Image 1 (spheres, rainbow, N blue to C red):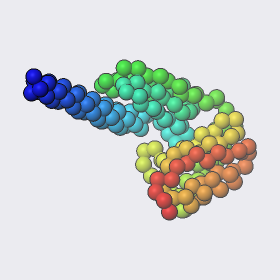
Image 2: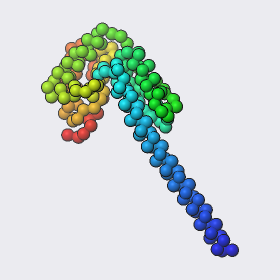
Image 3: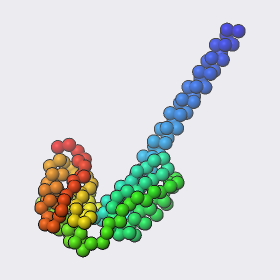
Length: 182
């Protein structure tokens, strides 16, 4: 009787271990899928034809659902971003919370001036290369928000100083992230 009880206990313990191992493998597979989906979403957004330095596209991946965030100048870019993400295999839902910035000649003038001030600075010119430069300049009602990534803290501070020196700007918010420490 005791041997049968021990066999039953060993079988139950083995089944519990299999279940735990299966749950662990399942969570690993889910994490790998989310990593893959995150890379696919980023890739699709960067390839959008009208995505520029004056737009900011962000996203959150939760399982097979993607939430789009950020600000764009063109309403068509908001639609294009949603359509591109919907076409990714496995995406079940797209929530499009991208803000379309209001049309403003004054804001357009500030955008151009900010671009020249930041990317015209010799120490920052290396960021100007590539299809979409990593420093994004978002202007809304004369207020500037800097988004993106720079290499060093001193670059982040220099971008802020250059952006703050543009005439006609009411405020500058520096949301730049530093990719590597200085």
